[in-house]
Amino acid sequence: MTHHDRDGDLRAVLTLIDSLPRGLGRRLVGIAGPPGSGKSTLAARVAAALGTRRAVVLPMDGYHLDNADLDRRGLRDIKGAPETFDADGFVTKLRAVRKATGVVRYPVFDRAADRTVPEAGTLHPQVDTVVVEGNYLLLQDPPWNALRSLLDASVMIAPPETVLLERLVERWLTHGLSPEAARRRAAGNDLRNVRTVLSRSAPADLLIGTGPQAGDPDHKEGTP
Image 1: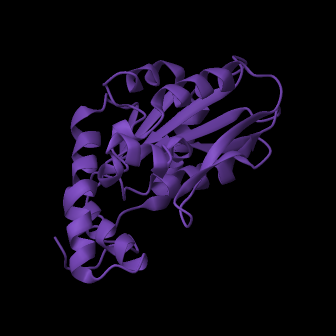
Image 2: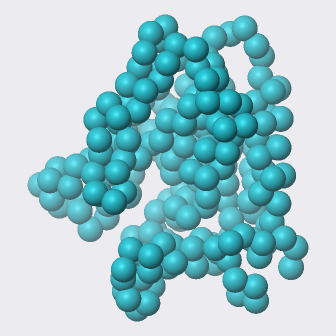
């Protein structure tokens, strides 16, 4: 097994960004991937490498529908699926981000509280690169498919399904679930969302993370 090169992933994304034409206004770079793929970590590293005054991360997770809305629609059990997000609101926000010259506010998701926090994120005028991250940035189903044309460049992180499943089990364990309950959650709704991303997303400009992931902290040596 080879070790996954996280620094190599970062360099590849930065090279992609550097290849974009300059002088055309604010750049939107999308980092997509299934649950557990590491897209949030990579997005944060990319923004940090570009500099906090120049770049900001805008996460799709801020557009989770509230739990009360999900309950009314009978969707609480599949939270995280495409239909449990305000996709139209997300598309509208990215259109505004492209054109805005002043401060733009956007919602973020508080994972501990399991709810969105309106206008908790701030995009200042000097920011020239917005790193957008989320599961469904390249999904080909409407209204998600409107996002692709708003991105100047796109990245897809697609580790093997076995690796994703293991990471998702670990995630639920850290949330206090028993090993059996964690496996059940990961193998149910999470895995359905993984397969949705991998099977229904448009091709990205850059595909990374498809090789063995033995070097990742979330992945134990010797597992398939």
